[in-house]
Structure formats: structure tokens, C-alpha cells
Amino acid sequence: MIIFYYKLGRVMFTKKIMGLILMATITVLWNHSIKAQEATVELPTRDEIEVKYKWNLTDIYPDDRQWEKDFKWLENAIQEYKKYEGRLGESANTLKECLILDEKAGTKLSQAYNYASMSKDLDLNNVTYQGMYDRISTLASNLAAASAFIRPEILNIPEEKLWSFVESDSYLKTYKHYFENILRMKPHTLSKEEEKLLALASPVEEVPYSAFGFFSDADIQFPVVKDAEGNDVKISHGRYYAALESTDRGYRERVYKGFYKPFMEYKNTLSALFTGNIKALIFNAKARRYQSTREAALTPNNIPVAVYDNLINTVDQNLEPIHKWANLKKKILNLEEFHPYDSYVTLFPGVRKKYSFEEGKALILEALKPLGEDYIKNLKSAFENRWIDVYETRGKRSGAYSSGTIIGVHPYVLLNWNNTLDDVFTLAHEMGHNMHSYYTEKNQPYPYADYSIFIAEVASTMNEALLLDYMIEHAQSKEEKMALIEKNLNSITTTFYRQTNFAEMEKTVNDMMEKGEPLTPDKLCKLNGDLYQKYWGPAMTVDKEETYSWSRIPHYYYNFYVYQYATSFAASQALAEKIKKEGQPAIDKYLAFLKAGNSKYPIDVLIDAGVDMKTPAPILAVVHKMNYLLDELGQLLNEK
Image (tube, rainbow, N blue to C red):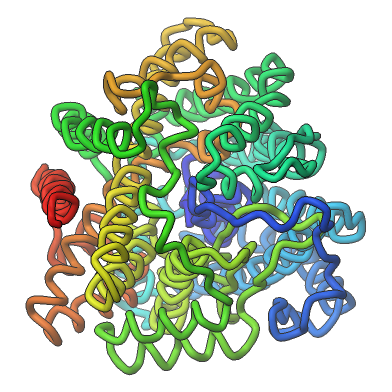
């Protein structure tokens, strides 16, 4: 989950909630391909799905009335904060009482927000839960404003006095690292009144992403195209990704071009939302005295800007593997031109399998056994107790995500399962997040019961790496092994190279707007198309539609989020190798990583686990691995 201290001001529960408000709850960016249902079959309604495949949100609240009760408590908490305003430096006890109130408010808000948000996501047309979501989002902002005095007042306590408070009270000792982090952020913390203003402005700043979300998931109208058999298919998010895997090239192209049609038609609206989001980031960065939006995004988690630049520069200097992969795919597919809609089709369609949700669960439980009995026990509990909402239904939010930490309650996972191998990997990915949140919340006190976005994707891609290794090891034929190596190469392409591509685009457009350069739809398309061409190399023919991908990627609204897919992917590959080579010592370090939460800075948590992302070594390791896989696939292809 994302910590937005710089955006909302100091309020402990805000860091638990804000990542959810932005829906940066660790969605798989490319949504992992989803196999289409038959064209003539409507998506099922919620009541047509078996209960065991639907979320049990009563683990949060037994009913909406209890939610309303907590909502009322939170409204009253606004007045409770006023009792402590201007008094935090009086005594250790006063400071403690205020933090206890903040913790209780944060816990209730975490539960209330998630309940409303997830209920809304199950049916975006449900006005009741949309209303509850809007109410709790507004209340979160009001609570942030009411508690905005806490951070500035802590900073105004003389350091010697603050540390004497800490030493005198066991509860305050728990907050030691938290206080250290506040002091570190002193240059970017504003006065009480200024913090309150920024907190009040937050709902307005979230309008671009909120509007984009409703357009993309609810209001958008995709065209109808003919499938491979000549049947009418109304394009949806799920059917788009499924079509890109189809061996019928004409169908792939029709769906690809049809999918982009509404995004191209509404390019002016979408560019206004896109640039409006960047303007909000610039406003906050300037308000908090940062040199750039990128520095503003990375500093709260104590990530040097050089880490971001190191990723982009190192990858830019090592694009040869993905260029080789494009050339190989073009050659095997026997294409005169290799287009974006050709980049996901499998080279080995003869080994395609379907997986039921039950089969996917069983496969994952076997593959993740190297993580130990305790991990498997907790994973089974998630599978058996309705932590997962499995199937695509009418009005349900597209894609997949983990809810992240919910204080006092287990985390949840949203899927849109359609029986593909990619669905199995999506499940493994999201359950990595789920277990990370579960272990963190169970093992850390409130101030640290979450984890930084910088390490958020490590646990998810670790699960994918172990699953892929297991499946390659147990491949039943040379063809199946080649197909799994292909999947590994595609994983590196999408999670490592593509996310770095997005990260470079994000850096470029923010830099331009910070210099006062306008970003028109045409300019965005030119920048996007040029980067796509650079990353894929000369083998790729870039269609006009692909230049518009900036208009449909939700993570561009997540404020320098995507680079962490690439850094986390590199870290997880290194940790997976350590577990395979070292066994229990590496497993113990990994479980400690899952439990660490925000008890240390994320760079240090990762170093404790055995990886230093301040160096290019983990990034280069992924480059070397892709070259190795390309060589292995080449050898298998040449075998008779």
C-alpha cells in the first residue's frame, strides 16, 4: 500500500487507506490474459455464483448497519481529535492518548473503507455501495484534516523532550521508528493549517483517477466484432486479453483495434484526466518543497531517486534480450510484420491447457511448498474461508487485486477467473500480496502493520517464480517445457521490461509538465509510440492504436508506482534463487521479510532479506536470466 504523507499530511490511518483510495492495491498491471466466454453468453450475475467462490465480507461487518455504526463513531472522532490539538508536547501521556485515538480511528477506517470499496467493486452499478464508498472517502479526508495537526506538533516538540517521552512509556517506544521517520520528513512537513488544507484538497485531487475508473470499468462501450468462427463478440476487458492469445490473427487484430476505439474517440477527455492527475502531483510536490514529483513520490519511503534512474538507465542499456525475443517470435510465427497484437499469442498452442479454480489452487499449494508449512497453512486458510472473489460477473470491477492490509481483519483478493493458465499465475501473484499483508498485520503493531509499495511486488512475483519453476520441472513433454519457458520470457517482458517502459514514460511526462510543456493527446501518443518502439526494437511494427495505451493504463494515476514492479521482480528472482540454493536459512529470512512491514525502511527490509536494490546487480541478473532462457529455448527448438 502507498504511504502518502506528503499528499495528505500526517495521519496514521491515512497511510492505511490512501493506497486503497487510489486502487493501488497491487493490481497486476497487464491484467493477465482472461479467456473469453462464448460470445452469445452473457456474464453471470452474482446470485448465479456458488457462495464458496464469493467474498465473505461479514468477516469485516456482519451487515451494513454495523458499518453505519462505525461510520458514526468516525464522524464523532473528528471532535475527539480537537481535545489534543495544541497539547501534544505537554506530556508523554497526552501524546500517547492522541496516538491511541488515532490508532482506533485508523483501524475502524481501514475496515469501513475496505468494506464499502470492495462491496462497490462487486457491482459498479450498485448505487447503495457507491454511496457508502463516496461517504467514507469524504470522511477519510475530513479525518485526515482533523488529525493534520499531529505531525507538525510532533515536529515542534524539542527532540530531546520527544525522546524522553519515548523512553518513559512502553507504548511510545513502539513508535520509535515512526518518530524517526517523521523527523526525517521535517523539511517537507508544513504548518498545522497548511497540512489541514492539503488534507481537505485530497478528494478533489482524486477526481481524475476516479473519473478514469468509472469510464474504463463502467461507462465505456466497446464495439462488437466477429470471432474466429464468425460469431458476434462484444469486447470487454477480459475478452480483450483473451483474444490476444488467440491463434487466429485476424481475430486478434479485430479485437485489438476495437478495444482501442473508445479510448481513441475520447482522447481529449482522457488526456485532460491524465494531465490533471499530473498537475495535482506537481501542486503537492511544490507545496511540500520537493524538487520534482518523482522526488516527492520516493522520499516518503526513503527511496533515493537514483534507484529509479538506475533502473531506467540499466534497462535502457540492456534492451538486446527483448529485441532478440521479438525477432524470435516474429520468426517462429512466420510473420512479415510483427505487431503489438502478436506479442502475446503463444508459440506453442498445442500445449494449451484449461485450469479450473480448484485445479489452480492445488497446483499453487504444491509449487509454494518451499516456503514452509506455516505459509502453506495460512494459504489454505485463505482458500477455504472465502478470502477470494473468483469469477467475472456483470458489473464487477475488471482485473485482479489484493485488498492489502485491513487492520484487525484478514486481507481479500479479487479475481476474474476464466480457466486459463494465466489465471493460475494471477492467483499465485495476488496470494503473494495477500500473505504479505496477512503476515505483516499479524506480526507488527499498528504503526508498522503495512508495507511500502517499493517492496509490494516482491512477494507476488516470488510466488510466480516458484510456480513457474515447479511447472517447468514437472513438464510432461518438450513442448510443454518450451511453452513454460515462453511464459517465463513473457513474464520478464511484461513485469520487467514493460513496467520500465511505463516508468520511463511517467518520468518523461512529469518532467515535461514540470517544465511547463503542454501535453496534448498527439504529443502523448508520439512519446508513447517512440518508447514502445525503442523497447521492442526494429522487429516490432507499432500500430497507431498502441500509441494510445497511455489513455487506458490505470497505474499512470498511481504516482510513480510502476517502476517498483520491475525492481520488485528483480528482487524476487534473486530471493527465489536463494531459497532454492540455501533452503531453510533463506526461507527464514524471507518469512522475516513478510513479517517486517514498515518496522524498517523498505530498502533495509530488502537488504535484510538478501538483496540490495541500490546496485545494478539485481537488474542485470534478470537480463542475464532472459538471455539464458532464450538460449535454452533456442536449443530445444533445434532439437529433433
